Image (cartoon, rainbow, N blue to C red; front, side, top):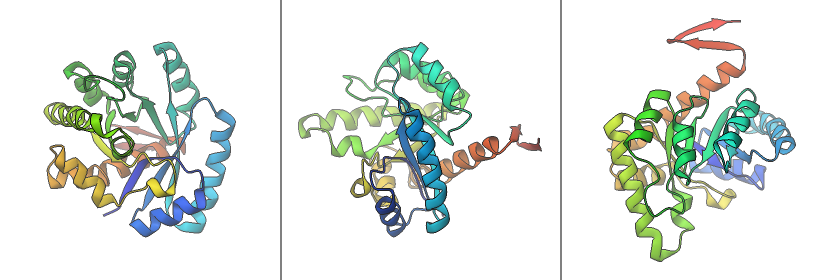
Length: 235
């Protein structure tokens, strides 16, 4: 089984790759924020070199921080053709919903961020399922949240898991690591998902098969292949 973490910020890429390999990961999505276009292009070059040296599958991910739906759409148009993975920072309900309704989005990151509710409802979850948009369970958010509100975050995540299971919405579990030391063993990530309501099999998929399938499909598209109803057509 191949393990992936789809939400990692790498201040020290070499150290991050080293720690990830030690923890048993096969691949990482290394994230840059959408406002830093030149930095993202440079990141992709560094990831190619680091992939060849380490043997890990390292892909470039962009995290869109949108203050409006217009900003979201503009960033998606800019990055979808160059990023192996596109995440949208959640927290604002309108942004969560717009992201769920747009098939160019791969992952809605921490949809419950700084909310008094879980950030999604049946409308958002059903749209995400229909468009193949995954919902994230971010362990880093739990670890960096004040103790007094941690229970609320757990409750929000638990509700989101329940909604995702009801509508068949994909779930990915990530470390949300800000540096190498924020990475977590993939089995720890899966254990978090179990606590929140996924079965053992579902939890393992959320750090392996679900992640790998998304990465591979996007890489094929960026390489000039078209996926249509399961058939690959070479351009």
